[in-house]
Length: 257
Image (cartoon, rainbow, N blue to C red; front, top):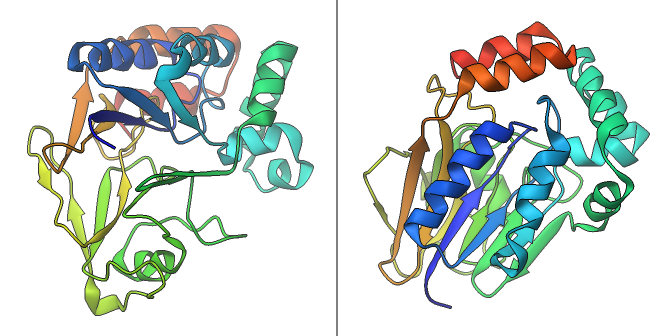
């Protein structure tokens, strides 16, 4: 497989952010888009965001379910959420047309093709661990069956690397390196290494930068690029206020937390 793939995650019903990111993806002439889930939840525009993704047609290579999608169909997943997230989930459920609910229900929990594995939280089955440090990543590499494993869930861009290229080998903690990703500083991908890569969040970043975050995998150049895009945060916040969603969800957009 050659070309460039855009990697997005955690849109969370934020239509202005997704629109800005998709415009940037179009300018980048990416060959396809991978979405790592949590397209809905928290934000005021879940249906609009799904419509934008569906409009990509075959360019949307993969959409995996996140925990906010699971909560729409699974009471146990819903009950695991905090009160604020449950309020947003009920709002989402009331506003999704049947076609969008059916599409979300049909999307897989994990997807694999060629050198790429996609899952919302962690490749370890029956676990929703947040991959925030090398110790968690070392355990997670046991479930990484391809060269690249893309995850979301934490809303923070981060890359874990191991020189253990064999997918049947568990990486020891000493063999896992965490890399902070920086905008406009391409990360060179070494032959024979495996990677767990988080592109950050489109609709609710939590790394102190309120700009929408996504990634671009350039297979020809052997690089991963972190991209940040400004969007109309005020418009997203106003839509959330009008929808009656918890104030906290709107306020955190302004500070990226």
